[in-house]
Length: 276
Length: 345
Ligand SMILES: Nc1ncnc2c1ncn2[C@@H]1O[C@H](COP(=O)(O)OP(=O)(O)OP(=O)(O)O)[C@@H](O)[C@H]1O
Ligand SMILES: [Mg+2]
Image (cartoon, rainbow over the protein chains, first blue to last red):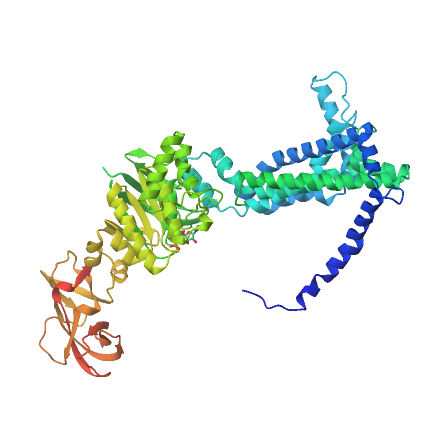
């Protein structure tokens, strides 16, 4: 199985490595540098002042909270769908196509359609009023609710795809064995399917979480002025306030947070399924 | 009353009917093997009994109760999969404990039962290993322990030994048989290895194209096959048409008189005989059940020679002693041992 050492094969990765280095690693590095050298000398002052800033604190917490909530919702909604598509569906190809279909439209278009749906005269409000649940139309837009809805719709396909990927690799014999040993369908889901799907759940969660943390269009269009998140904050600092240092500080904080939470997801999964 | 009975079962996948009017009955404590060529429906049959799939028609009776609609987790049947189907994320202990946990037994009892069972299958000290850290034979024993520990009313094996090497297969089948005799469980064992199923079972059911052609004890099947398919399966190679002329007396197609050890009810039937039960003599020899023929092929097979002899009633395959040499083209007289001729419809 051991392939002979060869000088040609490593060259194949060179273009990719070069691209990532020039367009990603170097800019990222200079971004970090900017944030640590606000006035040409090393100082963490930008970080300290940022974290003391109440507006930033709120935004920071909101970003993480919304991303976690959206990730959780995606997992909650994605798990049963993925389970059904992978294990029970007779028209798997079609179901997969439906699941990923939203990915074919741009986030801008999707956000606008939510504006129509959730607006004061949108179908949701019309229904709420018509059914008598509420007397007047509710504020469903430009708040955390509409942002979460937008995020979930945006990233649910990623979660479903990641989950189907692992569930397809769980042999049917395992669920039959569980049933044969006395597990109900729910029991075999809890004891067999779920722990064996953890790796997909982690992949999906990391994708969704990073996606939510970095998404710009959805919070910009579906959020309001008092529901800023880190991504919109970066834009604000860079484009409106022209404060590049502050913008890069926020960006670095975003990267660190995203990586930290992703690795927490990973270590949690290892607790549930040590073999994953 | 039989413990398990399948009555007129029809089953298949979508339009594709695999079992048609399938019947089998298994007594309590019996070890029954299902033997048949690949794709004949053995796994399909086990899956029906286990409740993994439903028959299109017919009934599954267990202890006289209709089990046809009972969901799989309520049947209390054990199943040893061809692939073992061990849970990869659970240790050996947790794999074996799975069924007991589902039965909500208390921790201490589970612990005791699991450790006892691991002792029975000779896997003490392996509790904390994961399946992928074990050899094929060890995994198979884990699968066996997992199925046995729930004290199933019926244990099914789907070619459990097919992934093992020849030596381990023999060892494991002896162990399975020993365990069965020790614990007295009722078992249905699927295999397509003839030797394996003869060695291990009380009864063998031979399947052909979705039906059971014969179900009997191994020696009964070996010595008294009822159909040509079974006869070929257990080593009969020479078949010839016979017409009955009297008690144990028949006439072959060329008019030769054939006497047999047993009788047959119908006027016309088929006789068959194994290559080793035909002796070869010089042409014109005065022997019982004599058939003249010409040697077509002579093959050296080590312990004996095999001759293909063309006769008026078809080609015969016979084994001869090494000392007997019959050159190709020579005319010989075959003698069919009377009490070794089996009559089939
Ligand atoms: N899921 C399925 N969908 C459609 N046809 C199937 C399916 N599983 C099995 N079959 C068909 O049903 C027939 C019987 O299959 P089965 O698995 O019962 O055979 P088997 O006797 O167990 O064979 P083997 O000894 O190779 O395991 C085969 O012709 C097979 O092609
Ligand atoms: Mg099979």
